[in-house]
Image 1 (cartoon, rainbow, N blue to C red):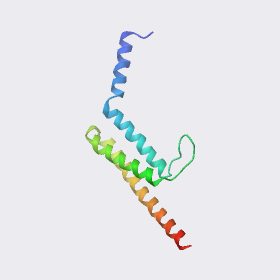
Image 2: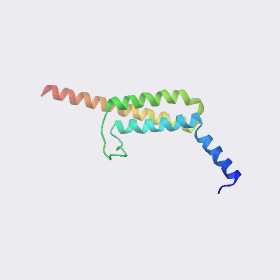
Image 3: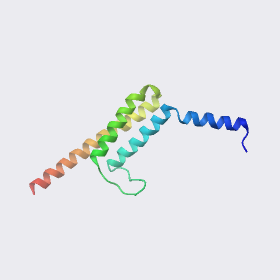
Image 4: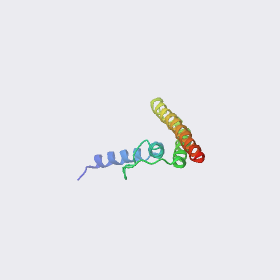
Length: 111
């Protein structure tokens, strides 16, 4: 059985984990992962397959962008830089995927 001190420490750790900024950071991270999955650059951890869904990728990117701007003042400089870099890379990959899909559509129309 845990002592009162251990119980109190565990409660404090859980309270910290469930602060709104930590929840938002976790959600932002999940949405970024879903964005990469939707861009086909990461396999779905459950199915092991990769699929491209530009609609889902755009939704994920827009959500990450929105959340980042809402919590930017809660982040340290390292976190800001990592998220900005990740977001920029996702946006660039999205544009490449869009151009590729458009080129594929044009090619199919010509045939």
